[in-house]
Length: 153
Image 1 (cartoon, rainbow, N blue to C red):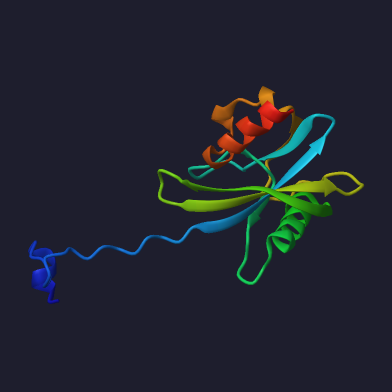
Image 2: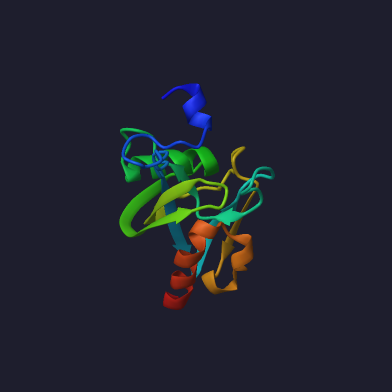
């Protein structure tokens, strides 16, 4: 199609306007680490549309990586800790208003021994009872799972 036709409002043969392919979801692994009725949450650094929001620790699943491999790598990078990866609890998809779509794998994990040492991608760490967390302070994508978790504990 020529440049003139593209901006002219004309439609290609068949009468359909071409659509942009859907943005593929970013695959994310989230560690659900429990201790004494509480879950471990990390706070994102300031800045960007998701800055200072609380979330389950974890992160992007890199190409060729399994969910378990991603969690082991991310928890080591974010918290300087090792985890034992357990059962996948839920998979959820969320579309943010800013355009990003995420597919989150919530996975039960056990934290290894030693102190948590937050890395540069973590502003703060806390242990919280799921029902005591203000949903407005949590990433939108994590809120439904956190709400269901608070009903179970």
